[in-house]
Length: 189
DNA sequence: AGTGAGATGGCCT
DNA sequence: GGCCATCTCACTA
Image 1 (cartoon, rainbow, N blue to C red):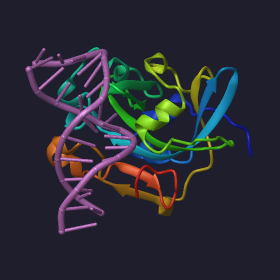
Image 2 (cartoon, chains in turn brown, yellow, purple; image 1 turned 120 degrees about the horizontal axis):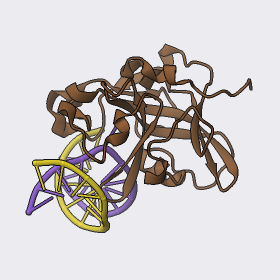
Image 3 (tube, rainbow, N blue to C red; image 1 turned 180 degrees about the horizontal axis):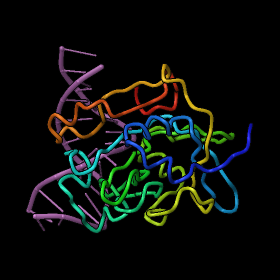
Image 4 (cartoon, protein in one colour; image 1 turned 180 degrees about the vertical axis):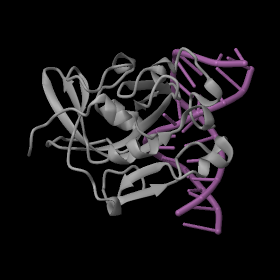
């Protein structure tokens, strides 16, 4: 266990497909009721902005809901889906290129009972993440942040098509979902 | 394995 | 009024 420093904003200003893969193995940290809980990121999806029909900012859409995607890379973007679940994203790049990485699954790094972190909706419920945590700076240790950890070997990263975006035409088949091979906390193999 | 329906509500057109 | 970056359960085969 080395020194746990947060990932700097520059980490998030690279190509979104790269950030999505490099986030695997990093530690999502949540302060809740005075205690800190850490979770290893094991599954992500990249959303490529104005040219990606599956992305909320497709075609330059800039509505109230997606405001946080127009922040600098390294901020959180949390939205409500299906009236029931929140989804956590990490904004990448710059306001001129509003892209993001969806955090789909994490692995608890401390003992917990009733673990339900395999899926974007379930992990937000487990970590008590809501609109309140939207737009936060993830390089600051406030209530939600991300710490560095050793890089994952590329051999251990699987790329598949994204889930739940069949409406997006051919973009639904782009291999932008990444997860750690064989990890039991991934939402589906 | 894959498919489909229902729960449920903010937001977009 | 319709649409979802979900989840669970109930089917089919």
